[in-house]
Image (cartoon, rainbow, N blue to C red; front, side, top):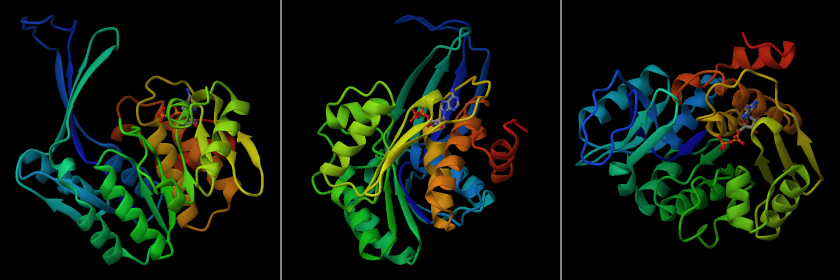
Length: 306
Ligand code: ADP
């Protein structure tokens, strides 16, 4: 499968308390993690056992070199990741003693992914069964990448996160076979206040009326609601001890795409996606929390986190 999206270096600063404006505080620790929705989803799919290629861009800094090395170690094909001048996408994340956070994200190289580049790379990487894209690179690049994916016969999956300030680009929903927003994104795109399974299904139908082939609305600890041309339903998630929900949606999307790319049927792919999302909440951070297929299968089989 091909994933088109952002790559970020997440720098996590642990502090006892956040500094106020003009103040310096001494931090307690510093961690560096892989981040960015594109990279997270590609890694989630690779850990779920799929052959994955990532399309995006990193800068010519140390962070870019580090991310490319980590992708190679994870078995993700990064031949579609451009190296451009300037900084890589970088998130500065401050976490205080209560677990509250403050985040500054510099898009850096992610902003340089152009429509032409994304389209060329998707064409080059075809044939692949599935194309998966979140929305942290310029929407015009996602639109052209998804057009190329659709023309090459791929199943196109859009995770409309974050929803661009100017809205979803015209023509994008119509070329997406599956659109996967969380409840906030579903509300923001459709104007329907998504608060439960019924309203999620109504929002899913609205996404299909707007052109999407099908829709899945993720509902955190309440699992996910889905709507296709054949019907609609709800998939419960798994009871886990959630400590950090960061990247739950990325794990959901990566696991769903990997399962569909491997020919798994809809019901079982949804189960894997929910199990992947649930497991991601049991470990702190984004990329460190993305589970392996063996853990996903064990949670589905036993209801236990291994
Ligand atoms: P996002 O991270 O995009 O906000 P959600 O919070 O809806 O997305 O989570 C995505 C999926 O992860 C959910 O559909 C669910 O399957 C799983 N999940 C999220 N939070 C929990 C939780 N507290 N317990 C179990 N599963 C969860």
